[in-house]
Length: 155
Image (cartoon, rainbow, N blue to C red):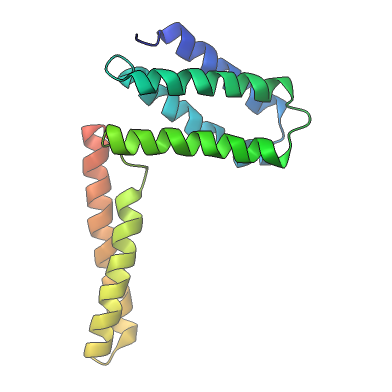
């Protein structure tokens, strides 16, 4: 069963209502902008994946719950919200081979920094090795992220 675009629009509108009813700090803590991207991906993949349909229904119910008690959210509500988003993100990454935004940048930046440290120690110049390694890592990671974005495989 495929998710209708009307259901997705309704859920996105509910998220916007929730965002408008909350303080900006609380809204950022709930990572509501990320919810829009996940909903878009769930809708696109729902025709071929039953789990995506179920995650969409779960997210729909959860957002409705948050809307009902938007004035008195507890720590448990935040924890539950992040757990639901992490479950969806994990499903999209494992089953559909999607990657999070700037995924490769974060990985290759740390790898480049490590290699820069090694080369800096080998050539007795950490001041030169670290920035070069960092720059190489950022360049490779940004290139891979751009490629993934071009192919449409980001969450």
